[in-house]
Image 1 (cartoon, rainbow, N blue to C red):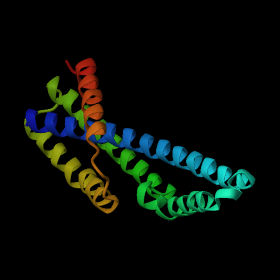
Image 2: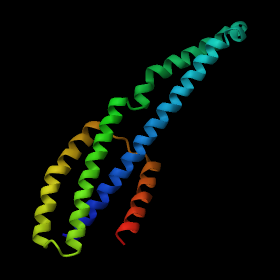
Image 3: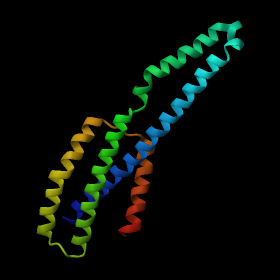
Image 4: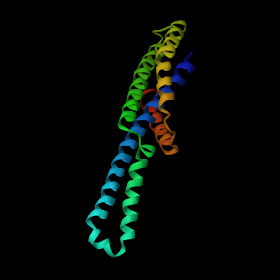
Length: 163
């Protein structure tokens, strides 16, 4: 039972850290996208007199901005999706806090193995199912760099508080 609780706790903490990084990345992408759109739009509009002799370049700039506007939601998550991901992160945090308390109680022998098993599977059937259903609905992409960073942050957390 010790290993099960520990493994589940580590996995959930990793998921929470990954989601925090993912949400941050989405906000950064949205910010950079808006800045790029403004720059390209501004250069197309404000530079019209400059571009007049070579109008086709201005046309390309304007077309590029329009294409970016059309594909924005394919590249960057909408505000509603980011809010749903934030809810998912909250579910991860709630579940993690319950698991961590169970781990501390079990490790200090305040809870027997039999009781720990009952509590663990109770949490898993309730909390984990809601996490999985929302996670499946959102289809969050796994980015290698974010996974590495989340892994480092997760290890740091456990080395600091549980070693």
